[in-house]
Length: 453
Picture 1 (cartoon, one colour):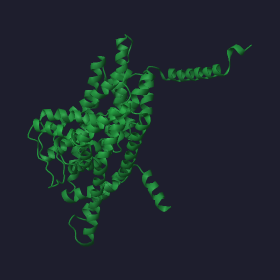
Picture 2 (spheres, rainbow, N blue to C red):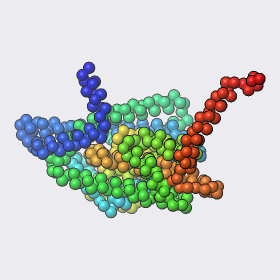
Picture 3 (cartoon, rainbow, N blue to C red):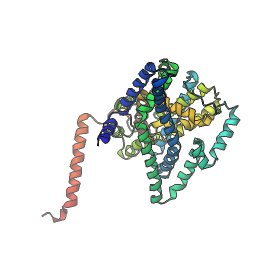
């Protein structure tokens, strides 16, 4: 009985707090027990390092099968666009532009990470675009079993897309089976992520023991690059997209979305948990409920500009570290791949981080190196994930409102960007009238007016 209570208490503590504790303990132990110690301390040092190795290997084991079933489940259950076409287009454009900005930012401010290359693995730079495209095509058409076994993420993605599209015409029972498998694998991932503090402890210990406390300067530079790019997107490219669609000053709407949605999402760190907040903001803005009741949950699934930034920057950092040169055509391919893979980030416990190997595979970077990059992502995730979620969630409302404002402007109606459609009193009165109407409808159904004398 004692063990379940301990586990319950452990899981009740915020994952961020647990990771912070693991990070601090790992750094302190690295200073107290240097790497290469002998005797008992040497055994302790090896055990601590083993914690990080086990965590990375667990991620390496589950990531391929997770991506495979996640994509199949998403595509087989995808709904038709219908009236959401413009919102979906804005979601896709916003995510792709975010990836492009991340590529440009990584070129301007290249960051190198402290990684441990595997001597048995070849991470040589591709000779040119031709080699990249050849590798891309060969990986896509590889054997699906071999793709899962060898963590060939391009092959996994290709086969998952084909099977997902093919299964759209399958019976609901068949779809439910794949959905259940996807949910089960995601549950296993959550179990692994719950052990992240111990893995982070081991990874930080190994990094600090080898490179000293200067390793945190490297992490700080990476955080600054990620947050800086996300700010450029939130206050630069996203407003530009809104302006192109509406020809109106976008900043009242942009700042309203960041204040009412982004700030909450920063602390909840969950786009799904922020859906009620976004729904309420859409209601205050006077948007069509039939539209935003669909577009907001949809945006929490596929509108992942922040995830695209994380995937792109981390993959580019791995390339800079390994000395892999990236030409413009390959950079465009990376942007497309990051945007596509980011759309599945919401279904992954750990968000965009477990999809970094998919982008790294474009450059022939081994799974061993890619998972070390994922480990670094978890270390900086305290800030990175909060900013990523804030950008993702606030842009759900931003693009939903942009789509509706564009329609209203085309119809010649008055639009007040980012302002409530009703006053606080009007909202209160509206709720009262809605409640009264609902009550009258119930009475009409129960009592036949013709029977009243």
